[in-house]
Image (cartoon, rainbow, N blue to C red; front, side, top):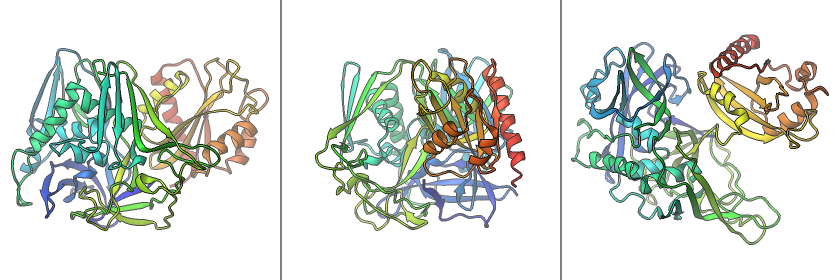
Length: 531
């Protein structure tokens, strides 16, 4: 997974700086490309501003620590809250001066001119920057960020047809097939078919197009929009609170408080293919060797990409959306003739490619076909999704621990495992790879819904190749005794002296389960003896 590096990083090497504020975009250059200003504060109080492409807005989250131009994934000193909104609340858009100074000192008059949404619900007052509303609800990819600042959104990108409770989206070849996920398709369908989402989306363009700016010294027109379907909804948010006032710096999950306008969503792309015969294929019809560099450098100056359909992919955990009723999302693939589903295709991420570089420069601008740099695009990933009810308690606890989930998978345990089957079927297990206190850990949980409890296994180890095979064969098959328990002696061998621990299951609340998991991670970090 490629990481983005800010090429114009203004601090000295090794300096840690917090992302303090984001300003609305403005247009520069011959092709009027959108740029925005990001404000960082170093640990010594030094304040620096940098200019970046508007297409990077999906990745910027207030309060995040950066070092040497890269995100560290850390958000120190922030509070996590689950906020439930009633039906009777007051929502208004106002300038950022409404943020209490003890919660956020913005300083610059240009910072204060940015818009915020203020929600008053009884005694509770919630304040959130409009740019965070835009990022969380709409800007999950560069494509979405670009389309929202266009008067003819999604024209030529995709078409939508709604009949009864079903929406059908047809993407065109102008979109890279390998960035289209169920999450992206759902957001686009909501913008096109849900009245409140569409209204908020149009408010963004209306606010951006209110005037012309020709000088970089002029402040941008502040973008604003109301959060759609917020009444009787909820947010899982991170920020700073004092008394009954909470300043939201990041929305991690939103739940809309009304029925979605559709319950079924089908989406397709000309390059979505099913393989027919021998060979491996992917959703875009070819065999792909990951050609992404480890780092993608993005500079401040406008730079048109040579193509938008073969981008460098940067995976990004986006704000999760949930609904009163589950939306059934199906990816439509067409039959493909031949072996391997057409390995010769190269458009939209298909074909066989190799790339051996560590760092590569890219661009998030959108004037395609006239430049030399490869496009960069975000692919939204939801680390914890579609899990069995058996894992909901664990995942709920993980949500309230200060960790960053990097990868998550649910698989079936092999029948050769010494654990008894569950209802006649192989047990499911959950693997989670995450960042905690700057270190990377694995967690494995086996379905114990029948009360046959195998303790949760947590360990620190470099990401092995074929993680699923490593856990299911090397650990589940070889390290579980006949009685259905972990064999510590064998774990020592197979984990190659990596620090590990067990977290036993008990009849407990999510709160106590969260606390025991958090304590286990702290003890494991100390046990490993690494700096």
